[in-house]
Length: 295
Image (cartoon, rainbow, N blue to C red; front, top):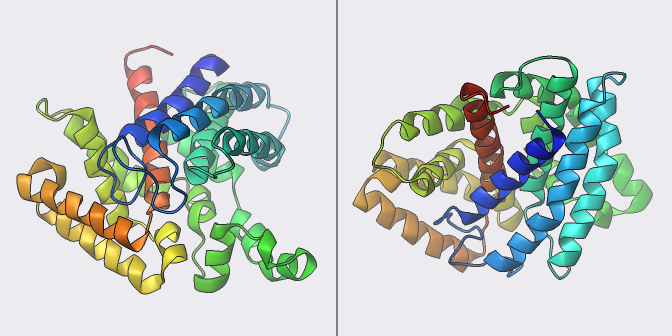
């Protein structure tokens, strides 16, 4: 599998996640972001900026046999930071979908690493490698945040780091260290199941997956906007919508639309769920390509 193809899978996953509509509280085809005001076209431009970086991350991972998985991860972070800067520049200084970029880049890196080890790149092996690449990252980076804050100030902390300091939630790092367990347990089986139902559009499948991820994710995007009770509230709301059928029933669709209005009024954005949806789309597409021998 070529590095450019892996890069295309990563950028394609971000485009698909962005286009999925309605994602309550998150940028989609019809509504802008709840906090930064970034719209659909602006975010498309930012994703285009990330595309060549995904390919380069994959290329370096394919040639990484001499490095341990965790060493490779920290070498690639430099590329990731440059890509994030380029995305922000082309989005007019607005930070868009950093979590989605993190997971897409991580999936691209792990896929390249799998190939470097002469293994078959599928969702199982990629998630195994992701866990190895990010092993112990929470202890190394999150449990020492008080030292970082004292040395260079609280303003240096990312949103995820601030949420860990406040609520003890590991966020994206924890999900990565666990090999994307929320994605493999809930999202991938659901996408596979719903794809077998011919009457469903891909958009409806991805919205249903997004709502399922909301139900099972402690979303740091929600915590940063309000508090831990709001996080639990949104999980309960998502659960209630799924119980009513979600995108598979008229009442479920109505509830999703109402939740979108509610979150936008409160300026809450479940960005972690959107980020995990990106990873789920990448991994499902990877499995499809492996199944049909496109690799």
